[in-house]
Structure formats: structure tokens, C-alpha cells
Image (tube, rainbow, N blue to C red; front, side, top):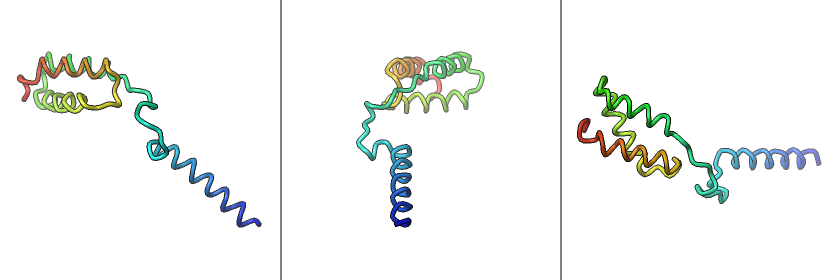
Length: 94
């Protein structure tokens, strides 16, 4: 009987761990998750891109801004700001 309760406890603990680590595997959709607001980071990127002080870093930021165009984990305002900066600076650092 003790082995059964230990096994049951282990199954419950494993189920909770899976739910925390892999929420999408249990039917949770991306719409259920809150979107990340990265607008402050994007604004900082804009300041660096505008200054042009570090061309290598600016090129890396352009790459990040490209990727963020399709990132559904970001909120719409952050993606829109990233898109604006990309349009403004992409030709300068590509």
C-alpha cells in the first residue's frame, strides 16, 4: 500500500512539473499567455541605432528587430515599434 501512495505522489508531482515546464503540451494555447512588453528595450535600441556609435551592435539589433516582427509572444505595440525602427534603420546597417 505504501508503494501505491508513493507512486501516486510521484505521478502528481511529475504532472505538476510537466504543466509548469510545458504548458502548451497540456492544451494551453499562445492566446492564453500574456504578451511581453519590450517597448523600453526597443526604445533603447532606437537610441543606439540613431547614434550609430557601435556599428556591429547596431547590425545585431537590426537582426533582433527582424526576428521580433514575427514573434507572437510580444505585444502588438512592441512589434509595431520594432517594425518602425527596422524600416527606419535597416538600410543603414544591412
